[in-house]
Amino acid sequence: MSLLAKVFVVIQTILVMVFLGMTSSLYQHRRDWRTSYMKLKGRYQVAVSRAAKEIDALRTFVQAKGELVSAKEREVRSLKTQLDQALSASQRNSTLFQQKSTEFTGLQENFNKISGRFDEAMTHLSAAIAAAPDYAEARNSLGIVLLEKREFDEAAVHFSRALEVRPDFAGAHANLGNAHQEIGAFDDAVKSYRKALSLDPQHREAAYRLASACLARGDSESALKACDNCLEIDPHCQHALAYKALALQALGKRDEAQVLYAYDQFIHLADIAVPSRYDGLIQFNDALAKTVRNHPSLVWEPFNRVTQGGAVSGDLLLKPTQTIKMFEGVLRRAIDGYRESLNEEPGHPFLARIPRSYRLTLIASILKAGGHHPAHIHESAWLSGVYYVRVPKTVSSTDLAHAGWLEFGRPDYFPTADSHLELTARQPHDGAALFFPSYFFHGTIPFEGAEERIGIAFDVYPMA
Image (tube, rainbow, N blue to C red; front, side, top):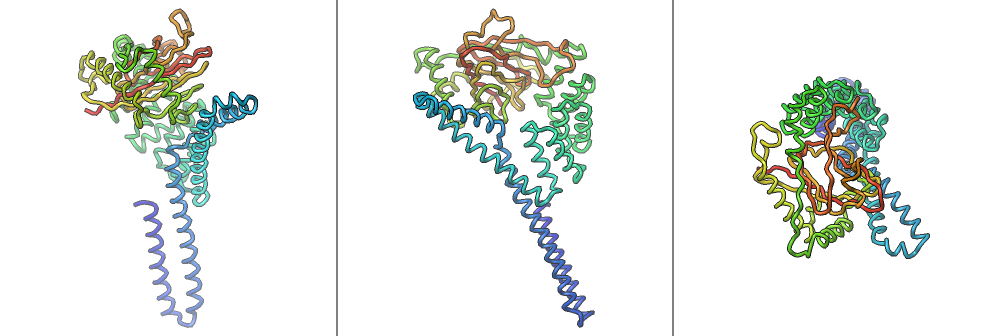
């Protein structure tokens, strides 16, 4: 039964009790009927007032839950910085402002839109908590927002408060574990994740995050057990597969790890065919670069993306331009070619899932000097990759630091020691697409220079 329904049941029950109490009082104490009535009326009004507050709290919480989907605090900060820079530039140089007017307008619109959503979500959550301080769901949701703001200690306070009210709230235990892990309190994180799993044995996120926390504190045996448990919950959990490979490496089980992280077998670099409409690769990539730079969803350091020092778009296929439609066509042909080169292998997490049909997403990014994509994976996808529209000239095969290359195998946590890690990297170039299993940890190595790196990341989701 929903909270709103419970509230109305309470009100209805109170009304019945008031009626029965009033009837009994009038019958037994006719002379004192007015005194009894006034007392009962007062109780009724208090009960209705409390119920109204609960209803208001529910309403504001539901509104907040909707807003949380698009609350992007990091975007707000970054866009605000750009907005201030654009304003400053316009004051110094009117010609520069005219050249950047379109970019400025877009930044201003994005800033207003995003900051408005975030502020509204925070307002709704705060209102819900003010009306009902023990509203566990609202506390938990506010904690999630604070996690994204990287205010980990404050987030932990709200998760803990939610658990005081609802000790059996598995999601809040898992989120408290996330807060602990972010500040390096791995022992506390492990306790929180295990508590979440004791309450909800099917909690997939708690299972794979338990593996991550165990790896971070050097307990590879427990991490491996957590991965196997998670894979029983979801055999296709990409995080569990990634952490399992790392746990096997740490335990010295190289052959077993190689089954999962077979870099040479699964990482594939291929040049993409140029659509016949274009005279060559340069013209085609120029058109793609223009489309990416002008895309309305492009946002600097978005709130929910792993990007630092760069901008990321939404899915380009939601409202594709003609250029993007042509790119999708040639990319699908390249994906199909890679897919057909693989041999199906029952029981293997990658080779046993080769799809006959699939759904595709395209996410563009622009990295500036020093920018990079930290280590991450792509949950729920089967195959991931990136097409390189623009690669800075400073990215070269002679650079021993591999600046600008795509690195594989480095995890998203800080290991106690990295001697067990098996890393590899691939050099990108204009017009190439890099393919790899979605459970491969990957991230870009920062580069320097004045040129931008423009790429279009893609994910393949099995449909059949």
